[in-house]
Amino acid sequence: MACYIRDAIQLVGFLYPTVMNLPLSQIWFIVGAVLLLLELLVPLPTFLVAGALGIAAMAVALAAIAIPFLPVQLALWVAISGAMVWYSRRFIPRDSNQLKDAVEGITLTEILPGESGRVQYEGGSWKARCDDPKISIAPQQKVYILRRQGNTLIVVPENWLHD
Image (cartoon, rainbow, N blue to C red; front, side, top):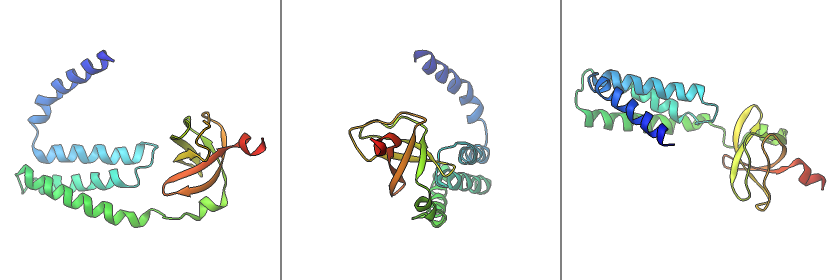
């Protein structure tokens, strides 16, 4: 663990002079690109939040050319990000009919008693919790989806229904 911390400090020490010599518009562009890549490449759903933050950072990168003050840029980024996240909520289904059709999934991570894990369902990764708070479900186990509470699926293991 200590070697990871040492490596991270060395990386920050290496990047700090390089990043601090860049114009603010380039830093905003890099931040926007990283957030957009996060939205596209990370398998966990970010529900368009990372993408909205990335697009807002790209917009601030353009504005930073004309507005050289960091506090104004940060306020602009917060305002644009907030508006885009609020607007993107309309593209996320509140009650998906697909959840009502299929009832099976596969656990991606272990679901410990009373805690949440991840389940692959309809081609996506969903947060899931076992309906019985006393049992755990191993990874790569077939589960039945009973219902949905917000963005969390309530599941039971396959053998639970057959016992």
